[in-house]
Amino acid sequence: MKGLKTVLLLAGLSSSLLNAAPHQVSIEIQASQSGPVIHKDIYGQFAEHLGRGIYEGVWVGEDSPIPNTKGFRNDVVEALKAIQVPLVRWPGGCFADEYHWREGIGPRHMRPVKVNTHWGGVEETNAFGTHEFFEFVELIGADAYVNGNLGSGSVQEMAEWMEYMTSDKNSTLANERRKNGREAPFDIAYFGIGNESWGCGGHMRPEYYADLYRQYATFLKTPPGKRPKLVASGGHTEDTQWTEVLSANIQQDMDGISYHFYTLPTSDWQKKGKALGFDQSMWLATMERTYRMDKYIRDNLAVLDKNDPEGKLGFYVDEWGTWYDPQPGREPGFLYQQNSLRDAVVTAVNFNIFHQHAKRVRMTNIAQMVNVLQAMILTDKEKMVLTPTYHVYGMYKVFQDATSVPFKLQTGLYGNSDKSVPAVTASVAKGTDGKLYLALVNLDPSESATIKLKLSGASASQAVGQILTADKMDAHNSFTQPEVVKPQAFSSKLSNLSLPAKSVVVAELR
Ligand code: AHR
Image (spheres, helix red, strand yellow):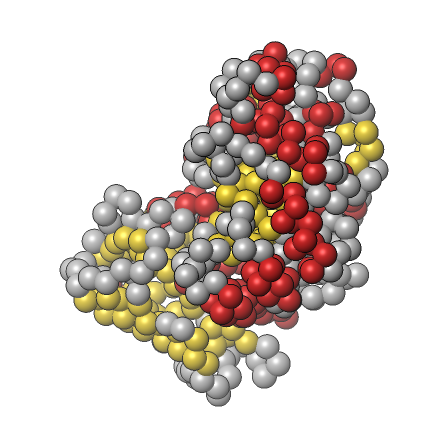
């Protein structure tokens, strides 16, 4: 499919019709200049009590025959360490607004068994609670993002959880934490006050939520230096009203506003589209939907720039990723789906968008980490497989805390008269190791792209790194064939740079 006779002007990116295949793309990099830092937390993950995300995926219990460290499966822990997961959000999601933290502390055999009413009506043993969460993030070297219960909890319950987790005093709650095995207070990087309060979190109006937020936040007390960033539950998809109302009405105790956007190939929640076995029109529809992230972020940031011109507030995309129809034969409420090369391309497209908006988009969490939606990792009893999405996280880790470098990208469009997206998107940044990195993604599943690169302010003649691609659009890794899609070495002269169809490249310019 070829591009449109249109000229699309986006900040730093212009796109026009180029009839000849392959796509002719040019990139001009100004390496002596620098833009905002790409916060490492853009690479955050989301782990909800949903399906086999926590139980089986992360936690198998100390008595499991699956090799584990204090109940956490070793293979998953090692895999997550390898991609340097910076942040994990827990316990939900919709689950967060039904979660009562007291049920997840103390001796495990005494914890109440509840019903997970949101996700499949299964038994929730509460075996994985506050202490297990912090032990897990400490094991993988990540920071903690705890999401509090505003929907069905109380101000007192949330305030006491905060005290339990962070107090260094001789208070009854802090001593209870010590009795449960943790002397030092836990470190919380972010704390969310409710989740999707427009929907599963209580079907509220933003005005009502803003008042509740102010009330709840007032009573979240922490010792000096222990205060997490406080996150207000914001809007989703094309909505900007939540950002508008929250940023206009909450003057203190708010560090950022959350935002959720899922990539459904069809954009229809009743029939989202298949994870595998899709055709080119579904590939294009997926790319078109996922690329809307750019516009939706821009629209919300315009609101923030008006209401918060000093740029204090972050815009946290704390749920994003692909969402397909449930896999046949699986419990639909578990949101288990396979993950293909298409998901890898979606991941890179979104990273490149987040990097463009790094000034405000300082944290995101892909949904979700293991066995749920666009997962990094799939497990089946003792087996584990790494998805194409996982590999993109691994390739892009050089961008964590890197300083973005401005560039101009000219690309043709990929699409048809109905739907189109830029054929190629990119990121350029100086890593914390001082090296200059370029990421490129070719969204077109059938045409390659030739890249004309002009570099000023630095000298380099080669791009050396990794490429992720495959022959089939739905190429994926399974328990029987776990290495169908995996990064390969990439090396090219800059004078001769090209990108295969449907590929992701991350390379050092040297
Ligand atoms: O990630 C699955 C669900 O999607 C989350 O629980 C909810 O916040 C969103 O609607």
